[in-house]
Image (cartoon, rainbow, N blue to C red):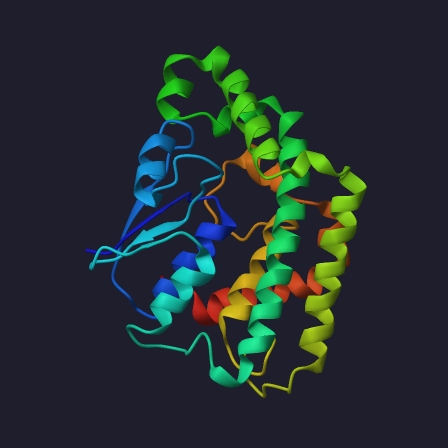
Length: 251
């Protein structure tokens, strides 16, 4: 059986899950435990050094895919549902995937920095057994994990304003691309005139502006993932993201 290893609160995992679900590809989901699960993840990826991360898909024929776009491409060749990578839009989809990665990385860096100043959110990041057994230490352990993640993805290499500018640039590109797209009639607006993986990827940039209800976050973590100023500035894009969820995120 195909297995997806990921984090329930991660937009990268959500990109992979959405692609698999919209293509109606059967799989089992297994939650990845950071730090504790890293040795097994390295063995799975055959990568003993360097950075490893989820989502990771292990297919029923033994292939291991460690990138959400690669997982989506694999899903696009199976199941049924909207074609996520139509040939005529390949170049545009690749460009928008790259933009989504930049926007997500910048948003993650800002969210993690907010989290480091929020003990309640840090405690939520600690594994549940630790929160129950060692409640006073949960926020400290969460802080260690969050700080490590910030360094791991080099979010500490630029200041918060630089990351914010990157977020804004990507959000403006989403707005401009939607404005150029052909009017959809009664159908939900899409970036390329039809629903593709570009919509899945770019919609996730809004996680660090206003997380969707479908993303499993604790109340404090949701607060840290949110940016009230950008939420007000890009409320039209949040509405677009929510419209996509209603129309295409049925699982």
